[in-house]
Image 1 (spheres, helix red, strand yellow):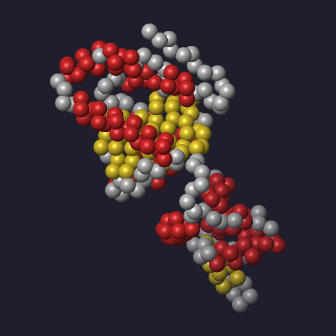
Image 2 (cartoon, rainbow, N blue to C red):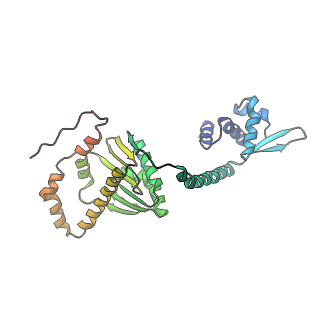
Image 3 (cartoon, rainbow, N blue to C red):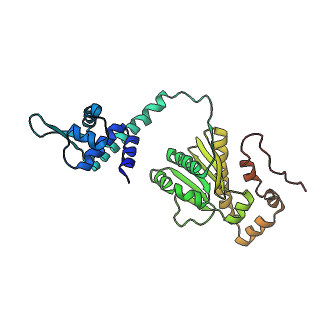
Length: 293
């Protein structure tokens, strides 16, 4: 990682640009530097370098050292100690805000629906939802989308969140209560839906619903209770159906699932769910309607 990348990361953690540059210069020197030397090595203007160094001293990221009666130098707090201090401060602030923010928040007047237009933003928002879970978490999807979420899902599980997962495909490292989707193979389910559908819902309060196909993705984040309820019940219904199916003899269930006329009718709209999701803004062209028979 370059020095510029380190400076940018320190800024993300709360240092100003000048503070980050001065701190990196001190770390790179490994020996006390005076203000002139810091300015020369870091690019911090000489007119502001002592003010910048004073701020670093104030936050405990640097220390003054005396090289003589009239000479003052500066040395950095070791990086590992600085990062440990930043982590403690950050965790302390998060704990404080977790208690304080709900007390000042007003009841929501509107519900949020946030459109997601690519796979990266879909997974990032899904990770936010997983990280917010405190009581229960429901997920349904394919390994390609569930696997990137596994670290934060496992953390939620370790913290006592009740995790339920429906997986369309093999999962050699399941987390929580994971149910492999057995009604249809992943390929058949993909053909029926027209996309790899991802559903993530936390605490019955927020959800991400989206689809991925051929590298493209779309979806929504919402805290609308009605949509979240549907997302949760979608996953719960799949789990309940699998529990019921386990009571059938395998051949009897397979025959029922593939030949029952009512079920075949429900599966007759191959790809239309994904086509509806991918339509985009209101007014975009609609997918062809299924011909009734």
